[in-house]
Image 1 (cartoon, helix red, strand yellow):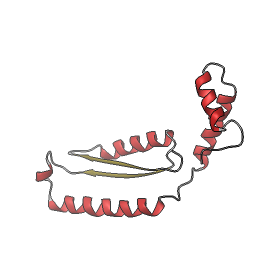
Image 2 (cartoon, rainbow, N blue to C red):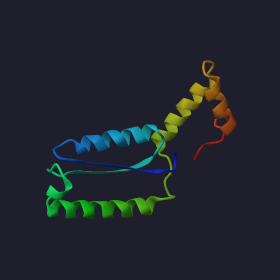
Image 3 (cartoon, one colour):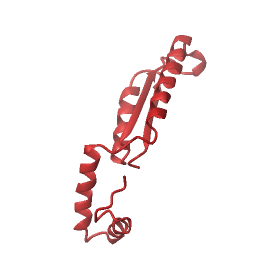
Length: 119
């Protein structure tokens, strides 16, 4: 998950699409996805047929721009300082883990309790 690129997309008839993409991006961060792109658009309509051409063009332009950014970063994503810090905290928790042997064994099998890293 540490080298993946995430995309959070939301549309809404009214408001609130920005908060939705922010929440999705936050959850992807906690899952270990370092680079998350967000696209949100309030379409001010209840059906796609009622959406104005101006908004449809704006969506097309925005998604095209977003796809170029995503394509440019595929294979180049590395976890940032925040994710590395969280990983090391989880590593310390797993080293002293006496309550869940399944998790601890998984970390041992992958070598993450030693020097190996998932990135």
